[in-house]
Structures are given as structure tokens and as C-alpha cells.
Amino acid sequence: MPSAIVIGGGVAGLTAGAELADRGLLVTLFERESVLGYHASGRSAAMFEKGYGPAAVQHLTEASETAHIAAGVLSPRELMLVGSADQAAAFHADVAALNLAEIPPADAISRVPILSAAKVTHAALSPTARDLDTDRVLQRAARRIRNAGGTIVTRADVRAIQHDGDGWTVSTDDEVTANLLINAAGAWADQIASLAGVAPIGLQPKRRSMARLPAPGGHDVTGWPMLMGVDEGWYAKPDAGGWIVSPSEADPVDPCDAWPDDMVLATGIARYEAIVTEPVTRVETSWAGLRTFPPDGVPALGPDPDHPGFIWCAGQGGYGFQTAPAAARLTAQLALGQTPDLDAETVVALNPRRFR
Ligand SMILES: Cc1cc2nc3c(=O)[nH]c(=O)nc-3n(C[C@H](O)[C@H](O)[C@H](O)COP(=O)(O)OP(=O)(O)OC[C@H]3O[C@@H](n4cnc5c(N)ncnc54)[C@H](O)[C@@H]3O)c2cc1C
Image (cartoon, rainbow, N blue to C red; front, side, top):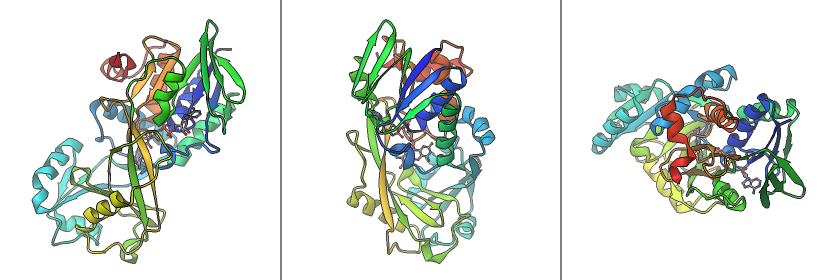
């Protein structure tokens, strides 16, 4: 039976592993942490927005929508861009880039009553945004791997990788050999390449922080849209009865268990406070995660040009959940030499060969 080792128990590794398992491969997935989705995949804003990201990402998101709907993981959540008079130029650039529909500021305030009538002079809505049930995505993918006879091993730190005629041998506390190696190690994917003797592609993890606040002004925020400041200066979103605010930073850091920077969080919250009527009096909790980008900001999906059995599934940046079904399908198709069902231009844009 053909086999694959997947390194990484985030959304990338789990969904790619599930696609390979569906195609008859015996999958062994290694995750260093004790739980799946501990790093970036457990810290996302859980949004699906078709207009977000570069063209290849938008195509992956579009191609993922049907599978997300079939899995029952999307639910209504508007995305609203808001700006003040001095931000007019940046506001209009965002409206065009994200394909938003402008609405009168009074409409925006009637939907989100904490928006300041004195400050909000511009507002726009996305017709395509949705909430994404990220936990369900991870659990469903894990089930698909296990149901097909695959194995998911947590607390399994991959420390050595060797290649010989039979395939890849990966060492954790045990040794496993497989025909294919899927590198879905998130912020650590370049380190995994180096362990395997494969040239890295120059991935850069970037920290993004979040603060969880009580619902502002005691409002029921459940049906509020996600709010976004112009030029991605901050965003805010309902979260299980509370309200999360992110400074939207993209600070380059080394791969790590990310932690928010207090000063970055405070200045980001100040940008948010400038446009609402309710001051932030208490932060319940805060966290940070890493969004990992290749040099051109577009994910790397498919076989390494110099080592065809080494399959990249990395660099998903801030789009790893919304693109997961199509990204995983493409990764599996390319790994097995099958014809991709995505358009050729997008497949080329995602090909790791572009980094050599
Ligand atoms: C604050 C924030 C907001 C976001 N919002 C959204 C959003 O709204 N919508 C969206 O689509 N995306 C969003 N994202 C992006 C999304 O979360 C990521 O693109 C996605 O989670 C990346 O998944 P991954 O599996 O590649 O990485 P990870 O989830 O980090 O998984 C990689 C795994 O590999 C494991 N690993 C690494 N090295 C080894 C080793 N040697 N041995 C074993 N295991 C190893 C790690 O422990 C880790 O668990 C957001 C991200 C952040 C941080």
C-alpha cells in the first residue's frame, strides 16, 4: 500500500493527510505538541473572505467554498470596513481591493451601535464573508485520516529525516518509512526541509495578536459584523459572546510559540478605540499566532523540484483555513502525479519551483 508521512498537525497537515487517505494512501501524521491545532491553527480569526489575499489565494478560497459548505463549517458573518474622513483614500483603495459595497455611515452605526457618529465617515460591507468553524475543520480531517486506517501521533517531534531508494525515513521516538513526505510544519517548514536535506524556500513567520474583551457596553454582539479598520490597521469580531480586537500586526519573528507584545496590543487597541464610543476598560485574555509567508506571499503547494517525493504544503499566511480544502486537494493531486482540477495559472503560481 503506498504511504505518506505528514509532518504537522495543523489545518494544512490534517487536510492534506485526509485527501491522501481518501486516495488510498496509508497516512502517518506527526505532531510535536500534545494537541492538534496548537499553533497557528488554534489561534485564527476564523473568517472566510473571498476577496482577501493575492490572486492565487483568492482562487484557492473560491475553489474551497463548496467543500466548506458541504462540511457545514460556514455561517453568516458580515465584514464591515470603517474609516474616518482623513482615511478616505485608503478606504477607497480597500473597497476596490476587497470588492466591497459602500454603505451610508448611518447604516453602519445602526448595525454596530458603538461606532462613533463623529468619526465614521466611510463604511462598506463584504457580500461574501462568513464565519468558519475551525475546530470542526480540524476534527473532520482527523477523522478522515483515522477512518481510512491512518495514524495521528501527537507529542512526536520529528528530529531526523533520511531519504533512500525506498522513500523517506522520519525519526521521532520511533522510525517510520513512507513513499511520500508532506511538509506541513507551518512556521517550521523551512527547518523540516533543512532536516531532510532539501533547500528551504525563505518562509517568514509574522506574529499577529488578539485581545479578548467583554462585549462592549454590555451589547449582545452575536450578530454584529466583523469590523475592519482601513489598511488592515485593526479588526474586531464577535467571539463566543465576547469581542476580540486585533492590532493586525505582521511583525517578523523566528518560529516559536507566539506570545502577544503588550505595546503592540495597546497601540492596536488605541487605533480601534479612536473610532468607537466604548473605551476598552478590561482585556480578559490575549494571545498571538504566527502567519507564515513565502517571499511572494503565496503558499507553496506541491513537490519540491529537486526532491519530487518531498511535498510542500506550507506558507498559508493568513488564509490557511479558508483555502484548506482546495489547497489540500491540490497538494494530494500533485503528490500523486494526478491532473489538478484547479486552473493551470493558479497551479503555477503555487508551485514551489518558483523559489529555485
Ligand atoms: C491571529 C491569526 C488570525 C488568522 N485568521 C485567519 C482567518 O480568519 N482565516 C484563515 O483562513 N486563516 C487565518 N489565519 C491563518 C491560519 O490560521 C493559518 O494559515 C493556518 O492555521 C496555518 O496552518 P498550518 O497547519 O500550516 O500551521 P500550524 O497550525 O502552525 O501547524 C503546523 C504544525 O507543525 C508542527 N510541527 C512543526 N515542526 C514539527 C516537528 N519537527 N515535528 C512535529 N511537528 C512539528 C507544529 O507543532 C504545528 O502544530 C490566521 C492566523 C493567525 C495567527
